[in-house]
Length: 117
Length: 116
View 1 (cartoon, each protein chain N blue to C red):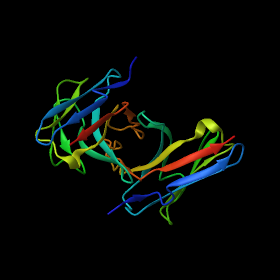
View 2: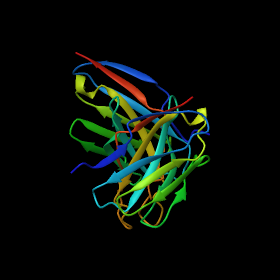
View 3: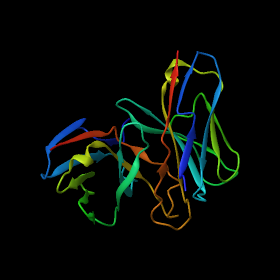
């Protein structure tokens, strides 16, 4: 049972335009969400996160939106750059009352983003 | 400051052989993790260690064992490799501090393992 789903295996965008990557989850216990970026032959690197008490978090060109009622989050990249071409993973965690996740992250399958010059 | 390092980078095994994947971090993190990545599956947690001296199973622990050797090092052992264990293995670490609202994981570069 895939608790975190990224239904688009790939996305192609022109440089300068907006990239929107989507992620759906089914487990209502998830309360912390992250996006990781991965280049070939490297490990994933943390990009941005959002707690379930917020519906938006922004960091430079990257914004994550969370719609709890729809169990949906999205990552917006504006403007997109060729260097953003990578695999993007959505991940979720149930932090719980203790405030620390002990890293039981559940990942989506990933979306390959290609930004064309 | 190397972050998270993994050895080896590549390995080919025959069915039934054993091997240990090594992982070390120099960020003084408490928690460490092992994931495997398979095509179309994302990353799946194999085992984790919340702090030195403790280990716990993740989503896909069968066929693996782990050792938290000290605060820096966390190894993953395949006792009798099977073709189904062909995958890319990632080690990660995080501060694991209780009470923090964020616990970002930092990943190593991965080990690509093929079992024939």
